[in-house]
Amino acid sequence: MMKLRSFILSERPEDRLRNRLVILGFIAFTIVVSYIVYGSVAYGLSKINVYYPNENTYVFTHKSDDPLKSMEIVCGQGNKFKTYTVEDEHDRDKGLSVFDSIKDSEAMMFVFETPGKYSFWMKGMKFPIDIVWLDNEGKIVDIKRHVATSTYPELFAPDSDSTYVVELNAGVSERLKIKIGDICNFDLSTLK
Image (cartoon, rainbow, N blue to C red; front, top):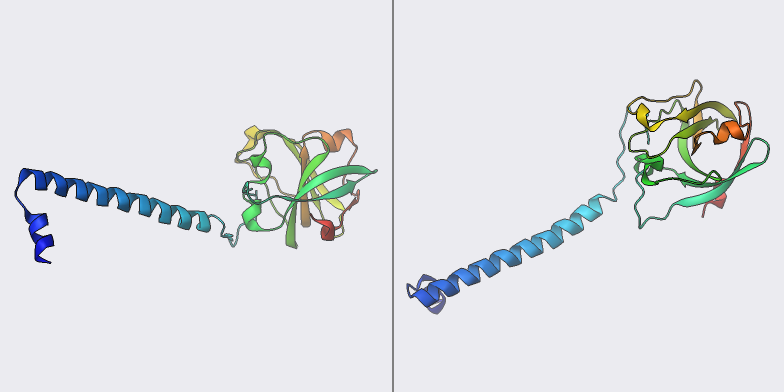
């Protein structure tokens, strides 16, 4: 113990330089370890699902290491879409905003546990969309067409309760003559 104390308290110039280097090394080591520990904790926290009670605005945070589930949905007169499906509040955070674009044959479906008037916005979106609300039987209860990215922070909500919401490229629902009252067929058990 005495040897360590005399080493730290030494007044010789070469010892002071060595002391400074030891202290700087310890500080650098502490910073690196803190960064590793904090980064691991922050990464873990980013995976936690967050529920916002009293808020019906849901829009999916896609983590690049969490592949999206997909299935086929058929709407109206046999119009088929490869549909990316999100089922919890965590995934509803960003919606299609994580994509630069999607094909006209692709869509995103939001699955809710209970019927409600779920509203959506265009925060962070890079392209316009059609929003299609479905009841628990898959019947289309409302459609908002050509929702532009510039409409944020406006909220778009259905006139009737829905359990599912499908987002398509803008104009697709009109071009394919998808309308209120049409049925969309899908099987959630086929999610991959």
